[in-house]
Structures are given as C-alpha cells and as structure tokens.
Length: 392
Ligand code: SF4
Image 1 (cartoon, rainbow, N blue to C red):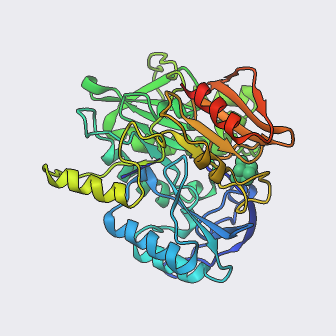
Image 2 (image 1 turned 60 degrees about the vertical axis):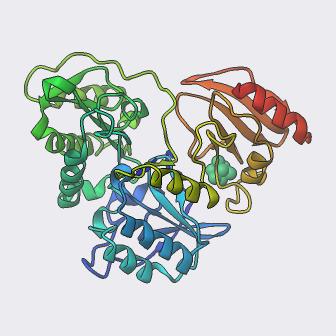
C-alpha cells in the first residue's frame, strides 16, 4: 500500500490517447474539462517533458502494479515514480507521443479500469486501516471505486474532487475531502461528512459507499450553476442546502473535523507477515536502495515540490536545496516550494520554506495560522540552520 500530496496541475498538453480497451475519453464534460488536473489520458506539459498522473484509489498497489508503473517510468519517462499527497503516482519526463502505449500498459496492469473515470478516482484511505486493530476500509474502497467507475455522472467530477475513507482515527478526515466516510468503530455504523461540515450523517455501514457516491452526484447537481469543482468552492447558501439535502433521516451527531495535523503521507506501507530476521534483511535492502526506513532519519519529514528544472514557475532547484539543508531529525515536517503555489504541501502543523525573489522565506504553519516568516538570502548555511531550528 502506498500512503500518500494535494495534487497540482500544470498546463494541459494533449489527450494522451483513449484507452484501447474501452474507447472512452476523459475530459468531455464541462466539469471534467474545466479543471487542469492531469491524468493518464490527459498529459500535461512541464519543463522536463509531459507528465501523467495515475490515480491509485486508497493508495493500494499490488507488487505487479508497482512493477508496471516502474516499467512505464523507465520506458517512457524519467525512470522515477513521484508520489503525490493523495497517494497517486506521477510519471514525469514523458515523450509527447507515448499516450497510447502508456494507456495500454496501465490498462493491462488494472490501473485504468475506466478511461472516462480515470481522473475521478480520487480516493484516499487511512493507510493503517485494519492493520493495527482499527476497522478495515478495504471493502468500502473496492465498492466505492467500482460505483464511481459505473456512474456516468461521476465521470464529470473534477480531477480535484476527493473522497476520503477514514478508519476512525481522523487522519484522512482531517484532509477536508469533499465526501468523507468515517468508520464509527464498535457501533458498526458509518458517518458521512460533506466537505468541512460539522454535521455528519450516521448510515448503515453496508450502505456507506453508495451514500458517498450519491453525495457526489448531489454535489454535481448543486454545482451546475456555479461550476464549482469542490464542495468548498460552492456558494455558502448552496453548500448549506447540499449538506441539508443529504440523507432522509435526521443527521447524526455533530463531529467537528479533527484538527489538521501531520498525516503520514509520502510513505509506503508494505503488507505481509514477515518474520524476523527476514524483516531486518528487507529493511536493509530498502535502506541500501536509498529509501528511508528509520523513523529517526534526518530525511524523515522532508518534502519538496518538483522545482527547477521540472517546473517553469520554480525560482530554484528546491529538491537539491532541501537535500543540502538536511540536518538533525526534526519534530515537524518541512516542505520546500519553488514558488508561492506550494504544490503538494502538507496539512496541519509544518514548516514552510518557499523561494521568493527576496530569498527563502521560512514560516511555521499551524492549520490556517502562519507565524511571522524569516527570510534568508544567499546564505545556505544560515538557511539550513534556520530550517533546523524551526523544525526542532
Ligand atoms: S515551483 Fe513548485 S510550487 Fe511552484 S508551481 Fe512549480 S511545482 Fe508548484
């Protein structure tokens, strides 16, 4: 399972070619065509070549699918898999003519079940659901993905619309998805939340995926006039009406969204009963291949956007700068952005390093709050020290 970055959107390049299996084509409707989110069939132009975003519902990948993605990256792109904040995978540095072959490869791997819905399959799930005594959300995930891919209306959802399946611990509920299902634990019921509303609706657990799809379809009706891509973009009165229209019975208890906090994104959870000492060997192999396996690694919590040279907007090579500034392990995650857009930044409490024409601006973010920033100009040593101090 891949644990998941909000996904960002460069400028459209071309239709990468519809899936040869079902002949569908994404982007044929006002909603789907209106937002600039890339997909697998709608590649986007970046400075390092074309970019494809492959939706991975719930971040769940089989070993064969991971292998197929790696093959696609090696054959058509820069050879790397780039994780996004929603647990999706981006392929970068693609040739502009690879769309058809890429779609065929991904279809064969089961990663493109419906061409028309490829950008609508935005589903995040609690990465540890079912693994540590918490309820599993696997059945919800399978059923909701199937329902989304079977709904003609859902094909018109924007590439930004997000479903979240929370096992009750609040990690993905804190992400502010458009439709969130929350396992209620011992009661065996499910809670349905629309956008950031405090009100939730208690529903039978078996009906939860269908309720989530119906809520998304209801959103599309409510958004018809405004053309909103997400629930939070709806005019206030329309949003209130939408929330009020969900569910036939009385709403359940008000459950405030968990305070935004650090979520465990951009990590990989590998499943399987691995006995010692094989587990230690596996960790050593992963570590030797350059992956971070120790919680106290100085790299833990360090993230960056693609930056220069991949993105034309970037004012510097932030990935290299982030690597050069890695210091002692920090309490807070740090995220480096090449411009004010901050593609893929974390949620909750984190340290924001953004490159501006005046230098690197470092600030401490707590949800909606942001402390007074410090700006460091042309002084790598001081930059590293300032970031380390902010993270401590
Ligand atoms: S520089 Fe980074 S944050 Fe700015 S648009 Fe490019 S990828 Fe996004």
